[in-house]
Length: 296
Image (cartoon, rainbow, N blue to C red; front, top):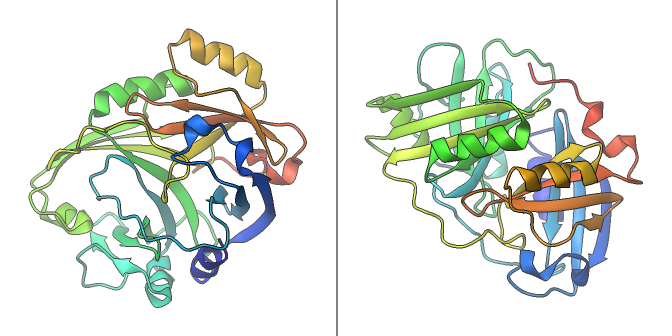
């Protein structure tokens, strides 16, 4: 966690608001690939939300885990920044391993509409995206705008998120034969399908790579695997939400667990990815997404 915070704090506003440890037995064993004695957790505040870092073997190092750009699973989070001071340049100076093919310092210009894109991997092999904006609507050095779920079946996943969130995707696309898009992923002859859901302070991005095809998932994602393994949505009444999700046929995992002042209920999407709904019990408003303005 310390190394991760040190890396990202060189490029983005990155403030650890809470750091604590819990016994490994606190987390249901069905969510993990192995039993752990303790789990080191850090809640990191950024301008549009929080990232929760979890280290299941405190004091030990593990090899990086490189997930393919095409997935399956949560492949990246996206940081936006102004093109006058692109975060990608700061990430590169900190040692980011660049994936995308671009000549200009802030990424690939796909369509001339004032946004340039770049993918890279941090020291753990975890992918990030930076979108450099010519006309940003925020003033911070950078901020998170979405988490991306690369899936085997986009349309099935769109139906799932519509049930989970209670509204439809505000945008969908299907694209192919765009060389500049190929440059972003560093994969030639791409064909993709996408969709976006607004969840207030961020978005959920859904990608299906049709060519090359996003593989079908094998089994369920575990919480203790290196990488993006879950996202959490804050709710005001967890019991009511559990009832609603069960009625919709959404699979919930093990009993809810109390972590750092939150009651957290994990569940699975149709491809075995973990998500969570969680209610603030004693954590305080400084850890709530109600602090953040809606995504613009």
